[in-house]
Length: 325
Image 1 (cartoon, helix red, strand yellow):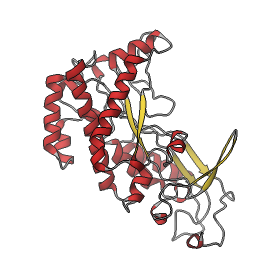
Image 2: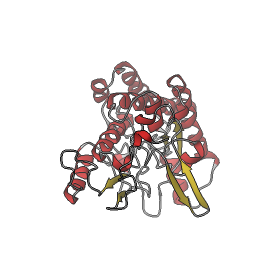
Image 3: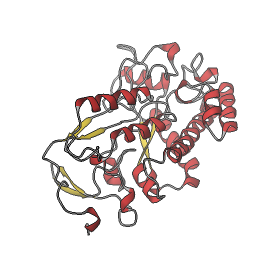
């Protein structure tokens, strides 16, 4: 899946993912080492009308970073200037959905959002190519052949987008002017940075509507920003069907040219996933089927697989969540 979407197949292949599974590209032993040049858009604070400019700024910031910083070893420097790989990501999707009275079941709205982000970021990189030149390995790449995000032909975008004309025009512009960055988008975990930003992490549901995050220097209470007015619109990942998470991530992945840090959380207690079978617990077969489904739907990798252990689920008592103060 990863190498089929590799725009630089003419220069080699991608042998592995990075630690967080969202950023990867060609590497050459002793010569070119992948670098993670990442930033993230805080969707909790963004309005749709702001997206074009924010995406443009995010791409330019990362492209400037490549020129302004010095990697610690030569192979990283070589890779940076040959491929100019960047990764504009997102955090706060759960907040974006709740704010608009949507949930992770609204796949069409999720797709529309990330189509816009994918288009604006790709267009921004094309504009940079006009100003500063295409990345060094552009000639012969899938981009140079008119293919777009994920090395997909423009016909895919005509079939799957409501804005076919802009993708056709973008494909033509890239063939004419080039593109500045070989990879443009990647969604990181953002577990720590989202705390600073005051939003939910990455594109995943909240772990819980309220919980304490324990760190080496103390314990931090965590609650999503729109919990007061949109309480019921926040899915709790600890008791949310992970196949729905996979479907949402696969929907987003269509518009992300690198990867997504997809973390899956399986609850092993009774009465969580099977309302018609209250005594049933999750089996290894259920987890396996979820992973196979992720591959079949086009997800590129899985980050962590976590579990809520049996009898370690404090919310499983007789209190009603609707009575929570």
